[in-house]
Length: 210
Length: 210
Image (cartoon, rainbow over all chains, first blue to last red; front, side):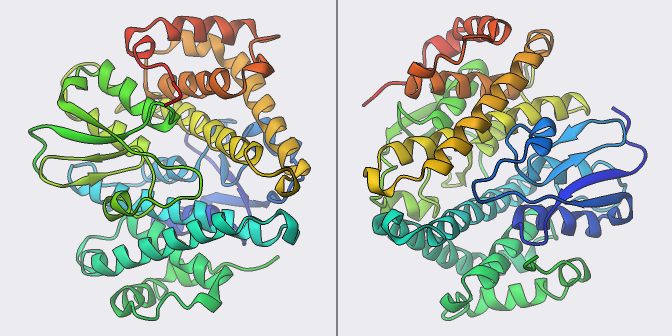
């Protein structure tokens, strides 16, 4: 594996998983080394070219100059974190690593549920399942309430991949489920997220249609 | 965080994500320290007690003696790997780490798709989406074909979390989609998986209804 040279990222402005990678790259000073290639996945149309590199057909998929392929988003971020000598997004020592990676898992899980909800919303009404919709909404509510209780810890812990994952998950709610106004009744989490949104890495990479 | 003492694992004999953890614990000589608690999730019934520990309501969820909660399955496995001084399932050095974690991501992705397929199969027929079914089956085929080309690397690489993830993903196809006989036309991957199934950690933890 040759880690020198430019990297290519299968990218979309809509994908929250891609957004985690782009924010991480910006935080680590690596954004200039990564070329974005607009790759359209989602829906039910397969993408054979992407699947030759990542058979799961998912983005983000990072391709190094030597052809090495890296996915999924946690692995791409952890790999990028090896390419610089500054403060690490993935703490090496436990339990700091556990704290960061549990938030990463929580944020990823919230995104997974949000994507299921979005897919469901886009289906013909006859194919939608009300019990699934209720289950997923209940889980998101439970995650948000748990995070409101952890907002102080988010503020007090050095910035990590966990913060990126939680911040992106909340940003995806703003992007796709704005009418649910998750901020209501959760002032501490809302305040933390408002600060997150002011980081240059985050503000430069807001989710967009297109 | 106090890592001494017994741990409690929210467990099911059907869950492939749990199975990865149980196999890892067995490989690392930690199985005796982990108490299994049968936790029923899936379907559309929420599990409020589990969601107090893991708001995503998913298993595996590991609870340490001091109350620390750890999820998802990759993080539980990586944590268990810190509790012993033998050969590591998560290589510390790159690119060995990349190889293991890419296989882990591929195996997890195959499981995610397989669970979506299973959920779809269990829905009333009017709610099923044929285009999604075709997309998911195509992705699994693509993953299997890619892995047939990587079977030699699986054999030649020191046993890692990547092997567990791929082996469990293939075992889940045998458990839930046996009629698809993924082994046909993929003799090298089938041979590797047959050897995987003979490991004591794997043979002692085959998926089961119940």
